[in-house]
Length: 334
Ligand code: UT7
Image (tube, rainbow, N blue to C red):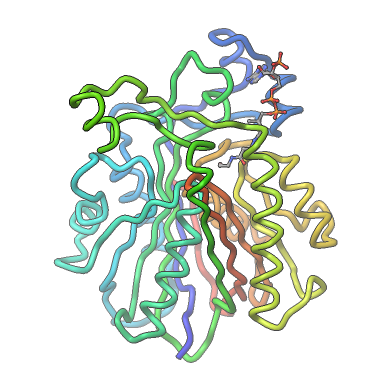
């Protein structure tokens, strides 16, 4: 049994924030942000644009993108997020209800920026085992809800978004291999120190340090080494080589990281597909929104072999090797 990609969609909040606008309220500049990261703009959620709302919209876009006539219902919904609507319960059951999918299996997973790759690996296993016949997976994050607006080392880097993919069991196979890993020794590199059980027990329920923190330089180096390892693993697992790869769709954190991976895979710059100049780092959403953008633009076509790879808090990392399906997917960003 194979796993086929049949739907793809994304949702981007309305409010656009440029580097120039940020430079007016923070000690930063368009020049610094552009040269150090490649980001020019990002979109910020307004009050009602929560993780569930963006997920719902991305889910609608993905459902609309399906062109194959088929009567199977979605039986599983996975939301990869580290910014759920509430700490408890998970966001996925709410999204399933908003989408009218019925009383299906629905749960969140948290691998921070690697969330979509983790969800993809899990989705692949659920379908291959026969536990699920048709599944929607989402990468959705509203990082502006956890950022300190005064912190120039994090605030300019992130944007909010959600991306959705629909998978089904099939004789075709679009997921050729997946690989994931983690190392909890480095949990301090990307973290919100307080607000969980550790601080609740220590601080008697009072959260002090509730903003997202990232040790940028150390993360930069670890992201490169673990994403290189991940892409090598998925190539080995599928028996393919670098020459077989048509496109790289990496986590959109930093253009300098993406350039290093592009060289590592011996690809041209235009084979490394990007969205970070427009949307910034959207954490778990970054891979599906980048895929949606380039499927919509017609860059990604049937039969293309695509390596997706991500790195994030935990620390976590992973990759997947995809073969783009033959049937058209009307992907859209709404
Ligand atoms: O999504 C999960 C995975 N995340 C990543 O992969 C992110 C990986 N890390 C990075 O992308 C980069 O490390 C950053 C973009 C976060 C930072 O770039 P960097 O070149 O590593 O800069 P840095 O942290 O070494 O900072 C260099 C200087 C510092 O000033 P001093 O100490 O040299 O005087 C910073 O205070 O740049 C300063 N700086 C800024 N200056 C203007 C930091 N942020 C800014 C800013 N505007 N926004």
